[in-house]
Length: 242
Length: 230
Image (cartoon, rainbow over all chains, first blue to last red; front, side, top):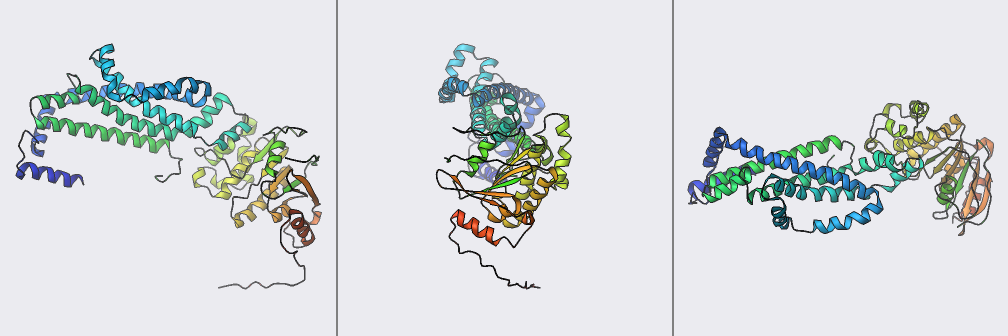
């Protein structure tokens, strides 16, 4: 399938009468990629983006796991915290931007916070659902053996909720990349999103497509990494994919 | 739920509780196991109670060995894990995960786990109901052996008459709503833990007590030949 698309792309640019300012050809994209690589621009922008995603995602993960486990395991905490979070989650992602711009300006912090917001909710929601969905029969057996409270959570509930947590983390990571692009499109001097806007401003479709290609590769690589982690940690599950 | 009754189980005795679905046999067992508190009356039992449920209820991320060890508190009990696994016949499967186990193997694991704390009383709540008929026969023999080797007192809830007749010393039949003890039947000592064909009167009595609409088994001295199919 990718080869078919590639062939269609090359054909369209070579013979299809597409102007160079609408869509660059594969060859031009490769050339641009090469020149960016040699000039060092490639790495500067790539690293900037990756660092932002890494920090944003890490913050989201820590917060979501902390808050999610508390909410999942403690009905009183759930009653207090969950409705507020559900309300916050309903806010369309980009609606956060003006607020963050106002509070934090257009620097790194604002971008990382936006990414963290985007990644937080899938992780939180899936983790809480996973904890709530733990088989009551397992919990009952543990309670018969006198395992309660914190030990019960650590030995039974959290491991049982792990599949859901990892699914949430994978979705959260995808969201993180999404929010990265949004954050960079709205004002950045470095990063893959910056390449996108720069390419648009100077009508260089090869630069735009290079940035898109790099984003696709980053997304794919991080997705594969997450799936690898999932496979390792979920050796025991008995679903369709095992 | 229950009409008033009192039940005394002798040490080392295996008691079977028979009855139709929904009559409260599991509830009674749970009350004995202190999983639920009866509204009136009381339960006096020994301190350590082992329970095996109809579902194995194993933690899916732990191997057989670790699942059995889950019940262990401290070194003494941890040292019993290997023996428990040997006792149920899972020595060669100790490293397997629950997803790789057959129903029978999973229940054996559950049984081994229930033995770790050296319970004086073993409660078995329809442990073999979810298994196929052949596995059931195998596990009945295994359970009989385990009860004998650990000299346990056991209370077995089952809906399988033959299982009750095989494993138990005494059988009580519950019936009605509120449930009451309809019949108490003493299994002849010679017929205990042996597959006996001579229990026709007992079988008929149990069928009658359970209200099963089946004609009494006729007992004649017919012998049957088995035809082997090559």
